[in-house]
Length: 191
Image (cartoon, rainbow, N blue to C red; front, top):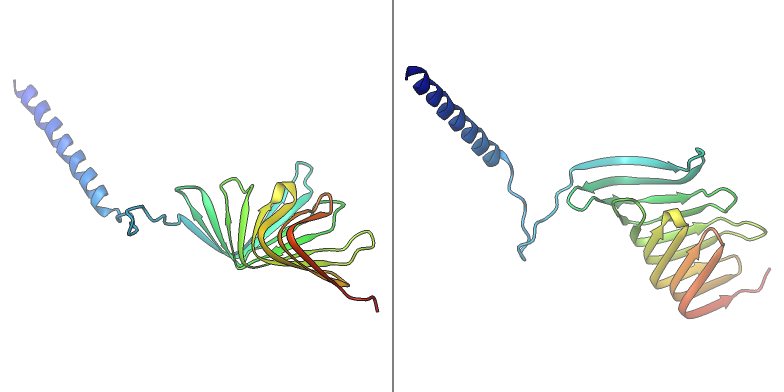
């Protein structure tokens, strides 16, 4: 009977110790921030400053480069916020396309990048063409497809023309730029 009481006492002591450890763990964790509407505020799980990353294809050829002043990763939806991002598409055989912005949000798999604030696209010249500069307030970038698109006003500046439009889709692979609406072109005479 003494061994039964000793076993029961040890089991009770272990249970109390486990409950105490659980309570301490729960009370030590910071509460999740809550917005006014009751939804949780996501907190980043890590931050990197002044970083750059390179994406290569299977043959080791650089496809694109991404750099930013600061990167914040959010574990709840696996998205990433970027401050002052710079994206450079270096697809072989195509002109380099560089995109700069104030901020960006990147989806979990990096297939979609949403750039906002002073977005500037610089597409290098090729096959007798000069550089093209495009500016807008928002740009949806699909890095793996080499596509950039917006539904907002855009200004495109080329060697002898300034083009204003609302909405645009650029394919770096096909070198085609589609303007969606309200297109206005001011063409300067060649000097």
